[in-house]
Image (cartoon, rainbow, N blue to C red):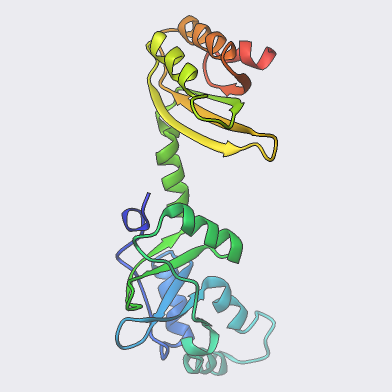
Amino acid sequence: MLVQNWMTTDVVSVTPETSLLKVGKLLKDHNIRRLPVLDDKGHVVGIISDRDVRDASPSKATTLDMYEMHYLLAELKAKNIMTANPVTISPAETVEKAAMLMLDHKIGGLPVVEESGRLVGILSDQDVFKALVDITGARLGGIQVGVELPDAPGTMRPIFDTLRAHNARLLSVLTASSGDDGMRQVFLRIRQMASPEAEKALLEAIGKQAHVLYCAGRGCRPCRDA
C-alpha cells in the first residue's frame, strides 16, 4: 500500500505570514486538524495543528478586551507557532512506513512531499485507519481466524490446502512475529460460507493443522471452547 494511493491531494495550506486568526478559521471551516505551512515555491517549511492554535490563543480567562484580542490574533503569524521542518514522507513510501513514523513521533499526520520538497498531499491517521480496514477486508465480514505456526518455509501450505478442500475463499492474510520462540502468528479472514455448519467444519480442520489462537465471526464457538 503506497502513500500516494491513500493521501489527500486537495490540501488546505497556509504561508508563514498567515495570521493566527485565519489559521483557526481554516481549521474550523474545513474540519481538519493540521495545516502545512508552505513557502512561495510550495515547499513545506512547517506544520500547524489545532492544538498549536489553542495553545497560542488567549484563554477565556484573559483580561484582554475584544479589540486587543482581535489585534493579537491578527498579529500572531503561522511562522510564530508552527513546528518547523516537520516529519514528512514520500508518496512512493508505504502506508506502513507512514504509520510507523506517526507512532514513533507521536503525531497524527504527515505532509507528503516530492524529492524537491514540494507538497503533493497529506496523510492523516484517519487515512491509515481506512487503509487498515481495506487491506484486512473487515467491511466484508466473514470469519477471522488467528493461528500460530512455526516461522519456517512451507508451514502455510497445509492451511491453504485445507481452505481449498473446504471451498473457502480468503479475503486477507496478515502475519506477525510471536517473539523469539521461532513461531509466527497468522491472521486469516475468510469469506462467509454457505452455512454455520460449513464454517464449523472448516475451523475444526484448521485446528488439526495449527494451534488456533482465536476465531471471530459466525461458527467460531468451537474454537473459543477449545
